[in-house]
Image (cartoon, rainbow, N blue to C red):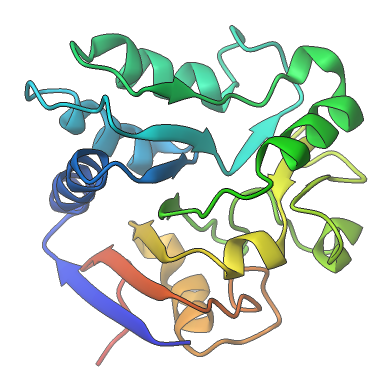
Length: 221
């Protein structure tokens, strides 16, 4: 995995740089995939500040919780509230994971929708345990190789999830990781080292990978 690590001063600087890259991807008309989490959320808020044109882009989600789309735990709601609803020139198409169909049916629908789509920019975070998207430690979803989207077998932080699988994430043209906080140091080290003991470390992307990390999260040189 060819990883470009960029270390900036703090979490706000990570979010600002992430927002810039999202806006550039939207202007280029890419398929952009969102994730949940506090660091991505701040990037979305900053991306919504300017009067940028997102109308050539299509937006997707890398994972979603099995909750209603208007639930505060929903990744769709997080992105809609912090970014999409604030845009004067929104994306051409918004492809949310329709959790109201039920986990398996929603994953099946998204799997079909993604047929022929070339993911342009996928924004990801990592947890202290090394999970990314909803590829969580020990869950059989990590072993799924014949689907673009799958459902976790068990609950993670109290809820089941739908997630892009390794094959789908690995074929992405560009992965953008946003990583902040000292609790992420170990997970980030394992990601960079391609240590398969964590879900993020086990990824083998075929395209570009850019990690934006603050000084708190960055491993010592």
